[in-house]
Image (cartoon, rainbow, N blue to C red; front, side, top):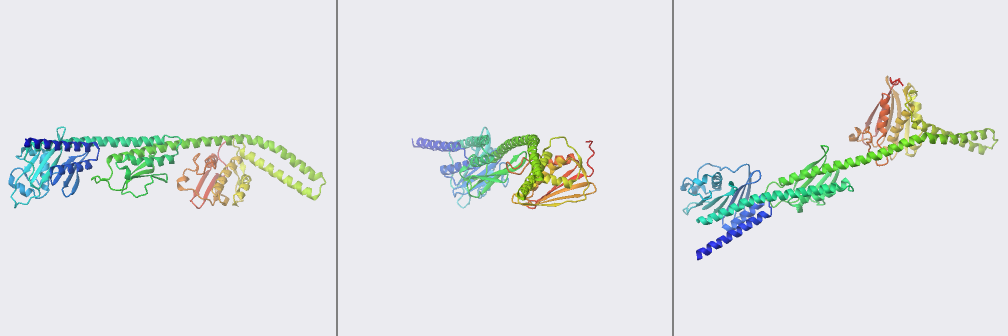
Length: 562
């Protein structure tokens, strides 16, 4: 009865151990944590001084060794470890004591069980393991006096080994060894189940994180800045240890953080690509060491998740840029349409204003000539006449600038036409606290050009210079000639143009100005007019040192039949 009671008690203990191992597997721990906890349970249950586990992970083998002094060792291997020496420890008993003096004996025995050669030994267990339990003489020094090596089996395949080492006598009962083999089989099954469960849970977390970021990015009311900030707060929840995971997104020189103001110990990052061009990156980090015995701080699943998140952020950013560009183009088209409408109305308005101005001018001149007025009234009449002449000149210039007709190229004096074009801008130049310096070559040859279009080129370039100097400055306007060309050089002392913007300034609708300050059409229109006259525009600029535009028109005009 006592023997039967002992058997039942042992069965109950094995049952509890099995249940604990399966429960741990249900938690979905990483493989290192699972085997460490399993080894501790085995050590406590068996009373062994050593537990060694060699098992295959998803892509490689891992060797975990634990001793009762709480020492632990992790080794990553491309294949099941080969022993340091090839001596057969199983052929005869006398060689075993010397073999047990260090851990190299464990390597030999584990390899024998994994390869299946242990089945031919007299120490073999029914499952193909090894049970070496020898009463060595007291004067023989050995590291372990008893060793049990059992195969980790899963689906008729040996996936690794578990070794128990005792400094005293080990197992002698076949039934007990079968129960230990059952426990090892449970660990093998739990390992596979744990791995599948863990990978599934990490995949679910990855998909949930990407889905949340996608939902955030699909909100039309959120700006790209809002999306990046919400994304940086969401990403840590996709990692194994969200409580001490920090995240940072850097996008187009803007930085977004999750508020954890600590420097991480480990980081991984992925570029955010927009049109195959890196516009920034997303970075995740661990603020402290993981409890896992893995040497790599980040799981492969976490790295793939961050890459997927960066890809999703790239798609969102590209879509937002497209939406903003579409909206900007719509506004610019509306602005351009308004300009066309203004141009169409200008001629009619100018004509309507010109008639009363002519009347005012005519009657004022008649009164001055025949009115027999005193000196005070005469001075006032002179002011009226000058004001009317000034108004008529403005209308003439405005009609010339806004004239909607096919180009009419005639031989003109560039210096004279430049002064005509500046007439409408001189008051704005003064109000902007800008000094205008003219340096004309008085010996310029005449060139064939459309006066209205020349005015438009000049106005566009000078307005561009004025906007580059919001606090005032200096504009130098120079004319010169070479053997083949007439040159108009416009230099300003403004902020200059960044190198990254310089190659884009002649693209339609490209502008670095704020909303309402420009439609990005001035320079492209000026370039188009100059090129239609077979001329060129060159720009030289340096940030902080101003900009110089050089316009060249060929002497003698072009060869068009106009």
